[in-house]
Length: 341
Image 1 (cartoon, rainbow, N blue to C red):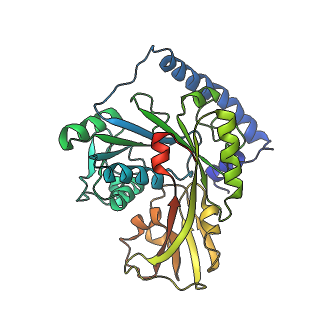
Image 2: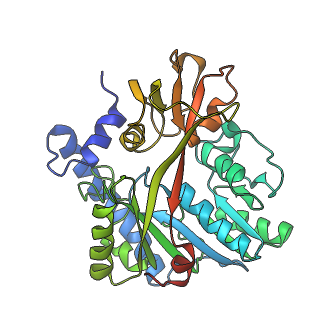
Image 3: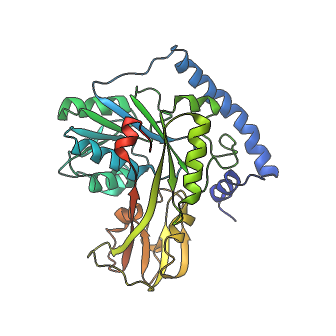
């Protein structure tokens, strides 16, 4: 039996989707749209007011479900603030982690990491590991998490990870990412499509970032120009490219052309697989996003995975697991200041 989540994801990115399952999801989307639209109306009319913290807060999010590439962008923005001399924190919901998100969890104080990936969640752990000098906290209550970071560490800048729909917390800048390859999918609301909100959400966007996950960035460049012209907001291009493949235990690089098994648990696995074109990929395994690996999941032979997955695989007694390191090219200064090239 095919995985239902996988089938629904296929529908989300099929502009010609049809059938019994799609019709059922379309019916459910009607009620989802009422709920989402009502929430936005309440905030837009100031019937409900967001809570404000004593720090400049940047939200990085998207209007579609998973896999756009927020995590490295969140990291780059946080690094930008640190380099400017600001005490900075990243606030995340901690999705997928085993810590209770009903409380505020200090994942990192900027020097020490207090929890592993399974407890913290793969993304908060990766952010703590790859964004030196930045406080990382998780909680379902992002306001309390932000307040904790300010009171305990004197934080002046906060980057809210996946915060576009979290309207309970006031933000000074709303940055929204869109995938150059997937776009808005079939342009339907959840659960029939990937859209988390209706068109009313677009007027809240301060900056758009088109994320290019293709080695040829021409398509993304064109989309960025069209987006800026249509939406009349500063739009930026974020180029995501493969950097190297390294052993997660030793750091040693993998020889180009080696026979590998590609394995990941991310929102859009096909783009990860495409980046491994310089290797002999004998098998591909794609698990659901945020999947918790067990020993039986791991195939024999050399495994290449994402850095997001690598933080969860490092505890296994294997010396043949490698990770693909990505590099991004993004004008963060222009993004924060709103000055597109």
